[in-house]
Length: 169
Image (cartoon, rainbow, N blue to C red; front, side, top):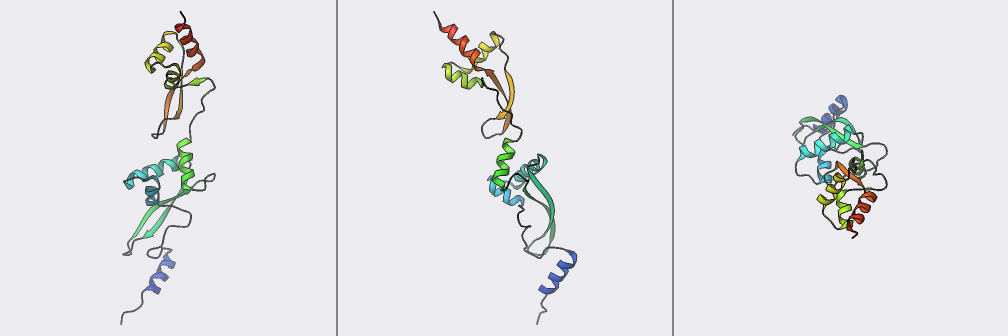
């Protein structure tokens, strides 16, 4: 008959403050595997890098957690939870994407928007701005799914007026 070691393992875990085998991370905290599933990333190291950058920007809190594998091998890993204004990982991710985004002044628009409105090419809009020495502003805003980038914004009213003047006979 084998002795029951489960009580002694639990006693040793309590003594050394180690988690018992199979114990999940603390309530309200998330592991890199959770991030990987949430962000729909294929590789765990990509999720780890994203979580570390979110922690560096102050969107997440991080702490070191000691876990145990199924075979009893101990390991240490970081666990994360959303920082104070955010309640879920989805909100924290949205806050991370929008953090650092600057607001666009009224009357400014991207050259693509102006080109669509005037029914000309983007090259024509940029050339018109260069020829008439209209200064644009580089503003850090979202562009597509790739995140924040410095984007050129031009004064829309000046370019529209120049285009109308050019079109008159």
